Length: 493
Length: 100
Ligand SMILES: Cc1cc2nc3c(=O)[nH]c(=O)nc-3n(C[C@H](O)[C@H](O)[C@H](O)COP(=O)(O)OP(=O)(O)OC[C@H]3O[C@@H](n4cnc5c(N)ncnc54)[C@H](O)[C@@H]3O)c2cc1C
Image: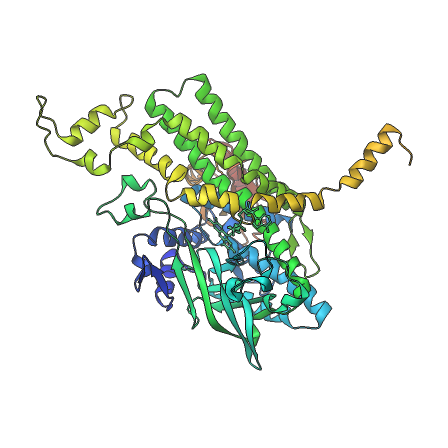
C-alpha cells in the first residue's frame, strides 16, 4: 500500500473500534471531538509531510526489510545517517506543529524491540525476532501509527512488580495458551495511544527472575477486545469546547495527547509476542528504548523551541521592546539552550553503533546527557519567553471580550471590544488581535495544554531526570578518567 | 535537458526553498533559450536526468541524492539568492548536453 495522506490517516482511525472514555463518558466519535482532534491533526502532519517533495527526504526512507519506501516513523535506523535524519525530522515536525506529534514512541519502540528480540532469540532459542520483523513489515506496508507503550502505573515505587498490593499495576501474562497469551494491567501516560492503530507493549523496568510474568512484550491492535483508554486531560483543555474558540486556544490546530490504556485480559496471538518470560532481556529492552527516546527529545523539543523563540521575538516586537539589549540577549540565550539540545541529539546519533541485529543504536551516554538537558532547558526557555512576553499573556481578557459589541454605559460609549482593543494595543501598525494571538500562543505553550508536551514531558518523558543520571553514572567511565589523571600527575600505584 | 528537482528534508531551512527553486527554474529557462530547451520536474529515484537541481535549506546539503542518477551533473542551491548561480550552472550543463 502507498503511504497514506493525512486525510487518509484520519479516515483510517474511523475504521477502528477504539474504546475511548473522556469526562466520565464513552466517546463514540472521538475522531471529531474538539479536545482530541488537534492531537489527531498533529499525527496527520507526519503523513502529509511525507507526501511533500520539500520534506520527503527526511520523512521517508527505504525499508531494509522490503526495499520499499516507508514513512521514517516506521523505519529501522540502518546507520548514523538514519539516526541523524530522525532527529532532523523531529525538529521539522516540532516547527510545523509546536506540539507533540506522538509518532516517535512507536518508532523508538520498533528499533529497541528489533535489536532486543534478535539477542533474546540467540540466548533462548525463541522466535521473537521473526515475529517482530513481520509486525514491522505490516506496519510499514500499511503506514500505521503505533503507540510505544512502556510505562506501567507502578503503584508503590518502593516495591517491585510482584510485591505490589494489586498485581495489575504492571502489565503481566495471566494465562498461557497454545495459541497465545492473555495479558492484564495498564500503561499510563500513553502519548498518542488513541490516535494509534497498534500498541507495541514493553516492560517498564528490569524484571527479576521471580517476576518473569512481567517480562512481556507484544503488539495488539488499538481496538483489541478488552483494551480501552481513558483520556488524560490537559490544562485549559475545556477552552477547546467554547463555541468559536480560536485565539484563546493559542494553537488551534495542533496539540498532544496522553491516555491511560487498560488491558483487561487481552488475548495476544503467538505471532504478536516479542517477549514472554525472558526476564533477563527486559532491562536491555528498557535501556535501548529509553536511549532512543532520549535522543528523540533532542529533535522534537528543539523544533517546538524554535517556534517559542520566534513567538517571544514577535511579542517583544509588538511590545516595542525588541531593540532592548537585554531582550536581544534573552533571545540569544534561548537560541543557545535550544541549539545545545539539538547538538546533543545530533551527537548521540553520529556516535551510533550497529547492534547484532543490524540496526543502529544511539550512543547511550550522549543520549542520556541530551535528555538530562531536556529536563532543564525548556523550563529556562519558557521562563525567558514569559519574561519577554510580559504579564498580559496571563491576564488578558477572553477573545469573546475582544470581539464583544456590548456597549459599556460610560461617557465614552465604547463597546467592551473597543475598550480591549484600545488598552491592549502595542506598537502602531500591529493589530491588537495579532498581539493577542502571539501572547495566547505563549500562554498555551508555557502553562496551557501544550505545556504538557513542552514542559512536563520534557521532565518525565523517556524517564525522570534521575533515570538519566543513573545511566550517566554507568556510562561515565570514572575509573578510566581516574587513570588519565594518574598518568598525567605521575601517580604509580 | 531534463532537470530533476530534489529537496533536502528542510529541517530548519532559513529561506523559502520552493520559491528559490522556482526562481532558478525561470532564470535557467531564460538563460537556456539559446542553448536549447530545459524542463524541470520533481526528481524521482533512478530518473536518469540531464542534471539534478538539489535545493537545500542550509550548507550541510544533507539531501540524499545517491539514487537519483544524474551522472554527477548536480547543481545545488543552499541559500537565499542562490538561484542565479544555479541557473548559470544549469545553462552551462544544457549547453554541454546539446554539443554533439
Ligand atoms: C507528557 C508525557 C508523555 C509520556 N508519554 C509516554 C509514552 O508515550 N509511553 C510511555 O511508555 N511512557 C510515557 N510517559 C511516561 C514517562 O516515561 C514517565 O512519566 C516517567 O518514566 C516517570 O514515571 P512516573 O510518571 O510514573 O513518575 P514516578 O516514577 O512516580 O517518578 C516521580 C519521582 O519519583 C522518583 N522515583 C520514582 N520511583 C523511584 C524509586 N524507586 N526510587 C527513587 N526515586 C523514585 C523519580 O525519580 C521522580 O523524581 C510520558 C510521560 C509524560 C509526562
